[in-house]
Length: 150
Image (cartoon, rainbow, N blue to C red; front, side, top):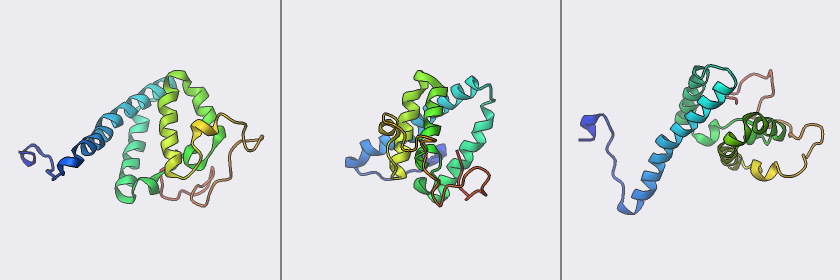
């Protein structure tokens, strides 16, 4: 029946069903919640949300072909405190908790300090608060590495 509806049937052991369902909720429901945040932030910046859908599709393609950790970019992955602070100030208190929770998850994947703890102390560099880009993190104007840059 699953195949008749265009789905893909897989066997899941009974003791893994709750975890399997949790992964499905993250893949579908949480992704939709994230898309809602993108819509709200785009509207607040007077930018058409369509500008972000292609970026998200490219990111999903990268994840599909390279894996999540290898596709990760952005200020949390770089430990870029100054950009994280600017983002949180720009998006406001309503959007901050979701942004920060996901930034913490991104930082953990990149083995960087969690922004939620990093942002409570003084910057490490009083001038910028951001470390130098790593070898896989091009700076502004550098050629892309094949990863989606955020």
